[in-house]
Image 1 (cartoon, one colour):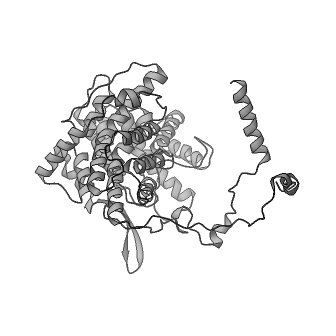
Image 2 (tube, rainbow, N blue to C red):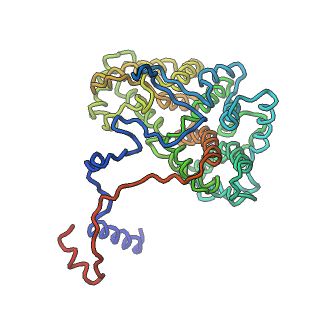
Length: 460
C-alpha cells in the first residue's frame, strides 16, 4: 500500500474515532410507533402493499376466520405450479412456456409458443463487440456485479432506452430474458481467465436450444450434457421464475418502476437486491452447511449422530454459529414449499444418474430430523418445512455448476417474474411507491463551524 493510500486509511480511522455514526435507533420505538419493521407485522406476516395477478403464494386455508396450515401452493397467473411442471414433463422443457405465461397472463397455444420461442432464439445474442468491450473488461469476482454492469451498459446499445411504453418494455424485457444466460456464463469465463488464470472458452449459443440447454452448452468445455441434466436445470429455472410481488427483489422492481425510470435501471436494482445473502444467496449457505455435516457426521445413516450435530448448529456450537439450519423454514410456507417438493423429486432422479443417491438420502434425513429439532428445540407450534434452497444447491452441485453461478442462475430465472411485475406496475401504477418513515431524532440549533469543538465536547 502506497503512502497516499496509508494516509487515506488513517484519515478514515480518525473519522471513525472522532465521529458518531448516525442511525442507531432504540428498538422499542418500533413498538411505540407501531412501525412495521421490514414491512412485516408483529407476527411476521408481510404488510399488504399492492395487488397482483401474476402469482399467488398460499400456505393456509381459512374457514370461519380460523387459519389452518396446508401444504404450500404456488400459482403462476392462476395455474398451480405442480400442474405446470407436470404438463410439460413429457415435452422436455418448460421455462420458456412459463415465461410466456407470466408475461402474457395465460398459457400459450402451440402457434403462440412456437413464435415466442423463435423470437427468444433471435434475441439470444449480444451486440457486436459487447463481449470483448464490456464483459471481458474489468471482470468482477462476483457474477451478480457482472450482470448489473452489463445490464446498465446495454442501455447505451438501445435506440429507445427511455421509452416506457408497454410494447417497448416488453421488447426490452424479452431481450434481457434471452441475454441473461450469455452475460452470466461469459462473465464467469472472463472471471476464470483473468482471476484464476484458466483457459478462455467462448461458445456461441444455439437459437433452437432451450435456456437450460444453452447454459450447460456455453458453460462446459466440451458443450455436452445429458437429457436429464438439461431437464432438471429447466425445472429449477421454472421453480425460481416467480414468487409473488412481495419478495425483496420483485418489490424492488415495483418500487423503482413506479418512479417511471427505464427498464435497465429497474432490472439492475433487482439484481442488487437478489445478490444479498438473505435473498438469492441462501442456497450457498445450505451447501456450506452440508460440507460441514459431511465432515462431522462420519456415518450418514446414523440418525442420532445427525441429530446431535444439528442440535449443535441450533445451539450455536457448530458450523457458522448463527444458530440457523439453512434451507429449513420459510416466511410463508409451513407444511411444505411446493418448489422444494418438486425439486426434491428431480434431485433424486439426478442423484441416481450421478451415483450420488447416498448423498441424496443424507439430505432427506437432515430435512426430516432438522424440522423436528427446530420445532422441539425452539418450542415452535406451527410446522416448519424445507424451502427451495435446501435442494437447489445440491442440484446445481450435481450439475457441475460453479458456486459463483448459483445466484446468477436464480437471476436468469427470476428476470421473467421481474419483467412481468414491471409491466404490471407500468400498466396499473399511477403513483410512486413512497412509504412513510417516522423521525425519532432531536431538533437541534445550528452551530457555527468555529464553535463546534467547544459545543460538542463531551457529547460523544
